[in-house]
Amino acid sequence: MSLTPTQLLLRCFLMSLLAYCIRQSTIRISARSIAKVDCAPTASRAMHIQSIPMWEGTGNNYAYLVTDDKSKESVIIDPANPPEVLPVLKEKIASSAIKLSKIINTHHHHDHAGGNSEILKHYKLPIIGGKDCTQVSETPAHKSQFTIGESIKVTALHTPCHTQDSICFYFEDGTDRAVFTGDTLFIGGCGRFFEGNATEMHKALNEVLAALPDDTKVYPGHEYTKGNVRFAKKVLDNEAIRKLDEYSQANKETQGKFTIGDEKQHNVFMRVNDPDIQKLVGKGEPVEVMKMLREMKDRS
Ligand SMILES: *[C@@H]1O[C@H](CO)[C@@H](O)[C@H](O)[C@H]1NC(C)=O
Ligand SMILES: [Zn+2]
Image (cartoon, rainbow, N blue to C red; front, side, top):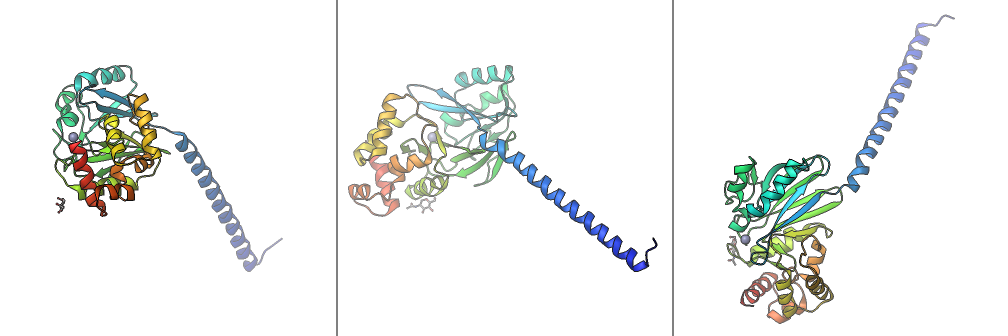
């Protein structure tokens, strides 16, 4: 069978159209299966957070060791008291349980950043933290991000007030979320306004931190919950405060047990719009309420 030039051209065109269609659908199918493979494990991942209590009974500080489960890459947050932190790091590094890559500091105070120099004598690590932290190598910009290992995404959130260099670090691993708040937000309380004012703390707590997803777990720099509840009960009576009271009486440690959503219920500094609190302090403007609450707590 012989074909005319026109027939030949038409056949050629149809063949390449067919080939094009096959190629396109294959690409689409493989793109879909890659997306599926990527999504499934993400949802079930969970970063590992180990609390290291320091100066128990006096400062009641916490350092935190956070590990990306897959790669074992780890960061140590506020390792302020090396005699209590170094043994944990040494053991885990020796057994290959972690690969330590960074020191992170929430602010410059000695009971948070004061261990940096000693830790550096044992491990050469970059220090990510506020501008006034001892030997800091990098101060991340507000809302800038970095990753730890394969799956942890960290966002730096500037929250100046307790100190001007205070930074909260928001960690996400799949659907697992945590925020390390230093001395800005405590479970049921907030830090003193050493270098800032009520306007700044209102912004830090009720704009920056309040914007995080409600299921974000809170890891503060100190175990101050009992004292915070004692004050909260003088200011407000609600179900969430009663629950926090019960929990803190029964449990010595409260870090990571409450979320940003919980704080909005039981933390009076995050309830500056609560009519009962406004009535008690005699102010209606959120910043004024914040100022009054802090003054009352400082005197209590
Ligand atoms: C609070 O501090 C900020 C930043 O330093 C400043 O701009 C503001 O004027 C201060 N507000 C008051 C009421 O002092
Ligand atoms: Zn501090």
